[in-house]
Image 1 (cartoon, rainbow, N blue to C red):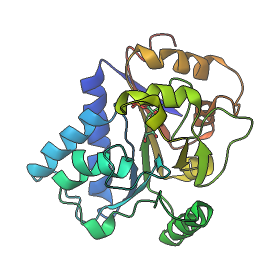
Image 2: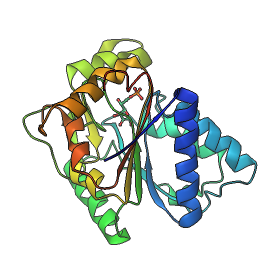
Image 3: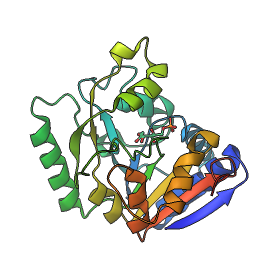
Length: 242
Ligand code: F6R
C-alpha cells in the first residue's frame, strides 16, 4: 500500500486527476471504474476542464462500475449512473458505447453480477479502480460484516451508510436497502486501486487502518493493506490521526 499525504482537498483532487490522465495517456483504452460520493467531485471537475483543453482524451477509455443502488434506474437522480453521467461522462468525450455500467435494475441481480464478472474477465480485468472510503471503513458497498465477498455482488446497505447517504434523498425511507458493488478480489486484482480521502470525518478510519495489526471483515478498509497496487491519497485532515 502506497500512501501520499497532500495539503488539502484541492491538492488531493489535482493529484488524483493527474494519475487518471497519466494512466489514460499510457493506455488510451484503459478499463476504469469511477466512484460517486462527495470525495471525487473536484477530481471530476478538473478532468472535465483538462478534457476540454485537449489534455486528456477519453474517447477510447472503457468505463465500468464500482457500485450502484439496486432498484434505482439509471435515470433516477440518485442512481450512481445518473450522478456520474451528469457530473462527468456527458461533459467529456467518452464514447457512450464504451460506458458499460452494471444494470442495477436487472430482474436477476445474481446473474447480472456473474455476467458482469465474466465480461471483465474476458476483457482482461480492470486497469484502474478509484474509490473513496466510508467513515465506517466501507469500500465500495463492501460494508462491515462477518465476511467479505470476492466478486461483484449484491450487498445489504448498512443502516449506518443509509443514514450517512440520506443527505442525498428526501428522507431516510427513500435510501435503497441494497446495492450492487465490486468485490474485494476485484479491487485487489485491479492494475491500480486508487483511494481518495479528505476531511477529518475519515481520520478515525485511517487511524484504525494504520494502527490495527490485523485485517478484518468488520473493517473492510483493512483489506487495502493486502494490495500491492493500492495507492491512497489523503489530505492532511484525513491523515491527522495516523
Ligand atoms: C461510491 C462508493 C463509496 C464512497 C464512500 C465515501 O461509489 O463506492 O464507497 O466512496 O461512501 O463517500 P464520500 O465520498 O461521499 O465521503
